[in-house]
Amino acid sequence: MLPEKLQRKLNKRKTDHSLRSLGGDAPLVDFSSNDYLGFSTSETIFKRASQLLYEKSLEINGATGSRLLTGNHRLYTETEAYIAKVHRAKAALLFNSGYDANVGFLGCVPQRGDVILYDELSHASIREGIAISHARAFKFRHNSSTDLERLLDQHKKEGTQVYVVTEAVFSMDGDSPDLVAMAHICNSSNALLVVDEAHAVGVIGCGFGSVQEYELESSVFARIVTFGKALGCHGAAILGSKALCDYLINFARSFIYTTALPPHSVATVQTAYEALSSTYKDRKHSAILQLQSNIALFRTLVEANGGSGSFLPSESAIHSYLLPGNEKVKAVAVELHKEGFDVRPILSPTVPLGKERLRFCIHSFNSREEIAQVLELLAIFTA
Figure (tube, rainbow, N blue to C red):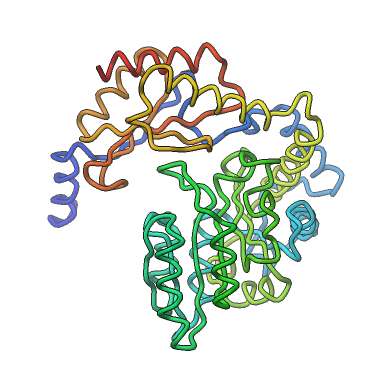
């Protein structure tokens, strides 16, 4: 039997129409995954990763331990060096996931007496890292440079070290902060800027993230890049100085006390980055350009169908259609599912009550016809 307190919480989820469950893998038109460039199903990446392991004599299934014990195969350091070079960073350190990277960084870098200022819509992993930090934390209004500046003015008088944490693209709203303005504000206040690039890599500009797109590498203390979105594989890396990576190796608990990624995952990461660089250079057959073209088409058709008032503003691959009420948004998602389209409802409490939504994720492989049809169906089912 489940303890009574736990059962009550489950029952409340059922009453609120917010109970989560694991779905199936029906062959639907994908408007929900983070596989923005289609890399997760790339046969070329799959075969090249296997070939890379063969070349490195690493035909093994697991890392065998943490990287500080038996799990630091040479492929890891080679991949980190390659990632750092691609992102024009001094160094990179692999983590098992973006969640682990955020929790590890925020849990050990800001010290007691320091201050963390974070966007109010920051991802759960950022909030978890802040929760275990000994630093004080204060949120600023979503994407508000003005509110950030107000808080910085307040805390810099105290002479404390301030860390500012934001995301390049927010996963629920699909919008972005003015990173140029934030970097300027942080530099003027001697604050350290940390940017989670999870949904920007492979999507924004040339595909290497917003920090590089706006040439802010020297103005950002740390970047978190994840591989489970546009790169179509698994894991994450923190980009920063060599000294920062050395510190994380010594103090980030989510790095120290876990078995390292299996070599095949690391080989896939390196191969995916090779593919990302290739699709950037091959402008004629660029998956990045096709993705950006599809995003522009989606926005154009939203305007044509008169649905712009319900969609949150976004220039990224994530477009959220506000449809308040868990029961209502789930019902529309079911109807789209019946028509062959995988569009997921985002329910409260994942988003605030009254901000429930359908989240459309656009991909390079979505056809013009699929984009037009799903928006036509949305208009019918929400009329």
